[in-house]
Length: 349
Image (cartoon, rainbow, N blue to C red; front, side, top):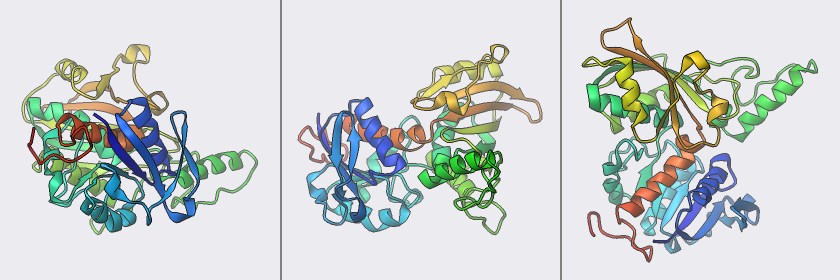
């Protein structure tokens, strides 16, 4: 089965990673089109051994493609995703624009693949926040086995989550400090080199940031609205790879040993947990990998039925590009797209 795919935002970090993931996973595409803003028209991006010339978003005919992987930001998505969907193309959007829309499914294939059937209302499917994506992959098997009552998460998010300019700022500040240049924050509110910043997104009246609110709202939509979550999101001087310290309170008892066995066999998870031999994963270890890595599983004795663990994933992959491609694969696997690339009605054979 082969399809035609457009990547909108092909020149950005996630857009380029989408092209890499499509090629690495041998996604059955008859044609792949790189699409970007007019200022990038004619620029070339790599897709395996090929170089694709960028098309102008405003002039591109989306009726000739089956799937659009949208990675151009919320403002662009709000304007263009409905137009693209109306042209008969399914949009898989990486921004926050559609995640909480009740008519748009929010999908992590290891967590709620059945919800993908709701795509037809707007022809749009939402990708979750990068930190949420890895979190729900870890939480879903625990919730199914023992029920999640409360979750407390502290994130350690890399600069790539804020885009290329943010990565450049970390690089330039780091170099500058060694030659006595005063760091000049631009993308971040404070110096990021050799520092951590306990703010991602804008502060809300309740003292949380909108990034933190995304994590509990999206988890509620995908898993269970009754789970209580408290989140602190922190930016750290890492280029790629988000980490999370997660503490869960379960409804029924589960030992750390049982949790390890459960997580070891759960989809999308790689358990690396042997602390005595440095058997745990750091952000550098996860770069370029598909998995959500779980380490340091242990019992949290401060609450009844408590567990704690460390969760690491490549945010440009599972947190964005990989998850979007997995959603596209789910569309194919469920027969929503025919071999010719035409849409099947929901539930049709």
